[in-house]
Image 1 (cartoon, chains in turn orange, purple, red, blue):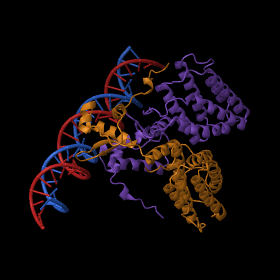
Image 2 (cartoon, chains in turn cyan, red, brown, orange):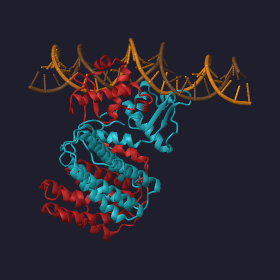
Image 3 (cartoon, protein in one colour):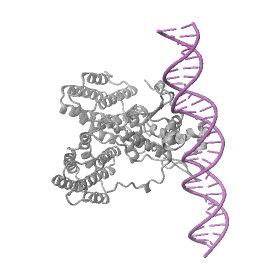
Image 4 (cartoon, helix red, strand yellow):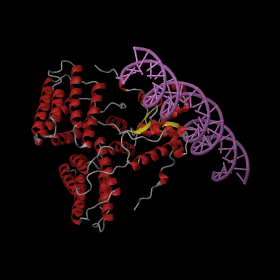
Length: 253
Length: 253
DNA sequence: GCCTTGAATTTATCGGCATAAATAGTGTGC
DNA sequence: GCACACTATTTATGCCGATAAATTCAAGGC
């Protein structure tokens, strides 16, 4: 087969990068978990036979990827740190910064995935989770009176979907939906909404969110799926007139 | 509203991180594209009023995220570099290293997304792209004789889907499908396949790939969608007996 | 013309020094 | 005995200057 690594493809990897990879491998081999300590700077200097600056650059690389965190002081040093969902979103956002995603692209995905999420959550949420969703859905009990209020309502609606995504047992499904909610939130906050507030669409969307919660509580997967599918069509109508392409900005993490 | 940043939440950000953020902002403000040059080390030292070591750590952070590349020599220095899809996959893979994804999770996603991809590609591929897919689908014209050959066939089948994902106009859809193909490929290569070769499932799967290409060529979106939906059920059957949870390893980039 | 050699430029790596932050331990006052 | 402040220690953080390595470009030799 082709297990042989095509080393020629990697023209030259810098020492910090190589050290970072060795540390990663070290973590995997020992199956270290979040919070487990790594050797301190001077130990790594000795271990890898490189200078302090090189070790520190390697640690920065891993830190940038969210794999470690460092603290000063006694008992300090570097520890393994799970990549947070925020950081993963930000790093993936860097990729799509260059990719020219459109609102239509996002809704093609949402229409395929959010019904799936809703169906898989039916009957599986605690009463606490359900009432938290209800609070989010009821956050605005009146139609938007101006463009600013419509923005806030839109962000709140997206927060509802993001929270739903947090509850997903399928972590990939949850991540992708949460990522899209984050992109759309940024889009809503940082770019203008040009539609005049549309009270009827808003009322319908809110009603569907509440009906979704009802279906989730009842454990009715098919009703949940259908309801959120309708909701996606409403949400898409909200966004349809927006600028086709997303803001070029980097996400915070 | 709430544009005010909750600075208290960020206990303390190191100087290299702050410098890296400033550089990112600098790139966004000037709308720099891939290949555009950044100031060299000494200029940044003067610009940000920090030492060389700090600047170098900042550059490593950006390099780790795939945002820049640096070269030595005259005309060298740092340039803006689009985040490659490989790096984005690797960085996202770091997140899922900690998340305990199951094969069932991946197939829930694949069943929702791959039919969507197939439908949206119907009638939109060039003859070159179609024949490349045909080559991939025909790569093995006989049933697997042993477990090793079945592995190879499985990897080839995943390469077919990955290539299809590359052709997607919806970059997010393409990325997610390609990411899953990558995970499943790793899983196939690095972990054992415990099923005995199943000639009938294989024959059926290959036939569906060829029928999919036919539908794509004919521009028949619904046939493409249905065909790949069937194919997903076949592929899932291949994987169903595998270990429930994915290998804990970091991806290369 | 073409190849080799060498100078110039820029990052890469190193090691040492001083600073800042966080913790643990010590002692003091009550 | 207990709480509080202070000190000492540990560890990363940041800075600097020197040297190495890689790359480009041009000059010189053939």
